[in-house]
Picture 1 (tube, rainbow, N blue to C red):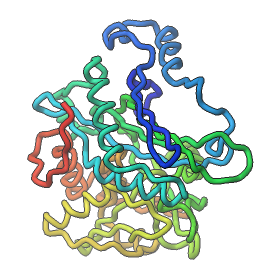
Picture 2 (cartoon, rainbow, N blue to C red; picture 1 turned 180 degrees about the vertical axis):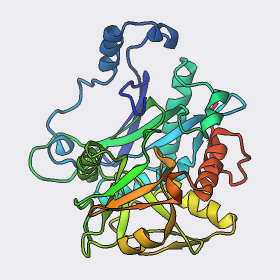
Picture 3 (cartoon, one colour; picture 1 turned 180 degrees about the horizontal axis):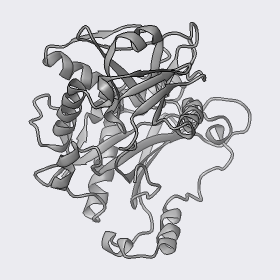
Picture 4 (tube, one colour; picture 1 turned 30 degrees about the vertical axis):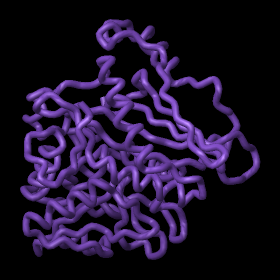
Amino acid sequence: MAFALNTYPITYRAKFSDGNWSEEYLEKPHKTSEEEAAMSDDDLAKLQDSRNCYADMPLVNYTSQYGLACFEGLKALPQKDGGLSLFRPDKNAARFYRSMEGLCMPPFPEKFFLSACIETVKRNAKLGFYPHYNSDWEKDSFMTADSVYVRPFTMSEGGIGVNLSSKPWVYVINTPVSAYFSANNSDAVISDRIRATPNGTGWIKACSNYVISALAKSEALKAGYMECVFLDAAHRKYIEEGSSCNIFFYLKSGELVTPELGDTILPGITRASIIELARDKGIKVSERQISIDEVMGETKECFVSGTAAGATPITSLTYKGKKAVFSDGRVGDFSADIRDTIKGIQYGTLPDTKGWMMRVI
């Protein structure tokens, strides 16, 4: 199971109108978590479908017609001591605010965002809907570990003509999630598609951005790869990011490079965390342009980063039929160290000296 459309019973909803946000928590149909686990697949699917339906929402709106919406993704992670904690939710709150501003929506207050994320996780956990820590996860560095995925997103008011949203809704839902990438494949390929263009919305976590990503990722999977990587739109020579994740290259010189932020690259929270951790380890980290030629010739190790990806190693990259293999086709020592460090902090097996984890239960 990676992402699963199995929304937990408690959902948060806020509506902007007359200059204010009104908030509510909705409890959707459910049984106990144990009873649901014992249900037949068909009965469980019907129950889960009912939790994903909102009869009081407009079908025709600027989101359904034009993709005018943005979202966030963060995790509540089971802790080794039995608790449940969110990873850097304040950074998601700030990015969600910027995304809504970038789409000319009334921005959602960061304090509302934090409260909604904490409360939905806490209320669902009280009903028994959350994963418990499993020491077996430590055997593969938490790459197949479970967590609660927290998805805040916007939905516009009703509308049919091309327009902006002035009275949006904000929802926060919880679902179960585990490994995002396949454990049996770590190969990537350069996509011919263009994810984002200058002066566009690439820096916003806009829903519409992910159409191209989904198409390119599907093409990569059909061709036998785990992931696709995008080049820039202007020159078609500089690395930008993966299908839904930032990317890092550990060069033979000992320099760790990730593409510099601009209006075509999403400012990842895991990305920023990895940069900080790497510098703490004495690694030279550069945020700069890096060409595909430099990557193919000078890379020792490669990995992608994100809420879903964590820090997932890439062992090869193919470009125009030429394949560059990193770290002899295995997970490199530096990539493994970064992966283990960030996962250890997130799941509570390493001390959180940064104050990144926010306790929920």
